[in-house]
Amino acid sequence: MLEALHIEDCNELLELPAMSAITRLTSLMLQEGDFTELPCFGGMTALRLLSLKWHRDLTRLLSSIDKLTDVRELNLVDCRHITDLPSIGRL
Image (cartoon, rainbow, N blue to C red; front, side, top):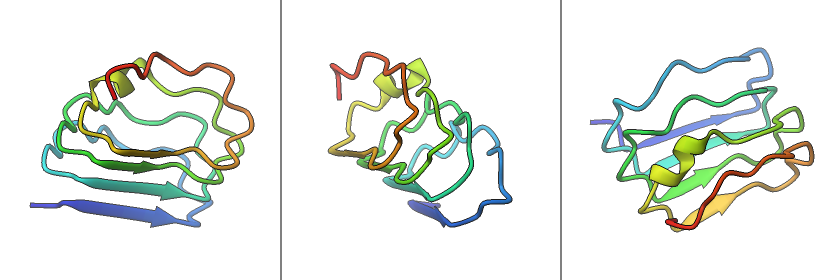
């Protein structure tokens, strides 16, 4: 089962498929890309690390981020266009 997914510097990759079925994923690093929207995080209950560094076009995080109750590290370095941050109180 996939436990870690690291995608870095893939500027031609503009969209990701739904990943909520990857329930054992513990580390998701999507760094330095041109995503404007992220997939639903709903079923990723084992996720402990979510890194979205250097996504300069990303404007918001989906509300499904509040379902990531095991996340211990959320990295949003240089995501300067995020204007809407959903509730992360359960993280």
